[in-house]
Image (cartoon, rainbow, N blue to C red):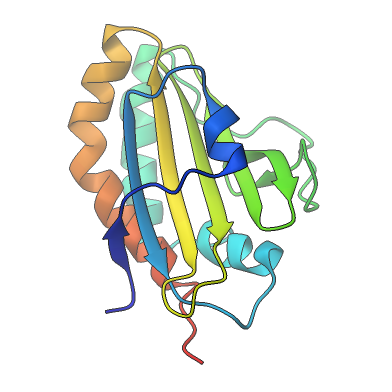
Length: 162
């Protein structure tokens, strides 16, 4: 098994990510060969083609509701706070963890990529969501099954056995 479901770790960045967490999940894989920057880029830098298609469908639907569907103009893609990896802004970087995310009118989304240094399944990818309103809760209910498939697929990109 390259990716498994886990309980969210209690890391420094997860504890401070959002004032309230309405949804969370954690998936893990093994990678002791790459830096945290490389692992983050392996997961979020390039998605599988079927995921790109799902995002296009999602964007065409949610645009009707006024949700964000495009990256800001002139984004910085360097690995530093304030820059972007894929659609997500980097909020914080510490030695063994990166916190990415996006804020919109319906919800706030954060994802932690944490290297626990364990022998197996050391890379923990935790999604945290705070609903801003009822639409955020409805939106998350609709996309939750797709979210799990997409995240697991993207995390497989970072799997490297020793």
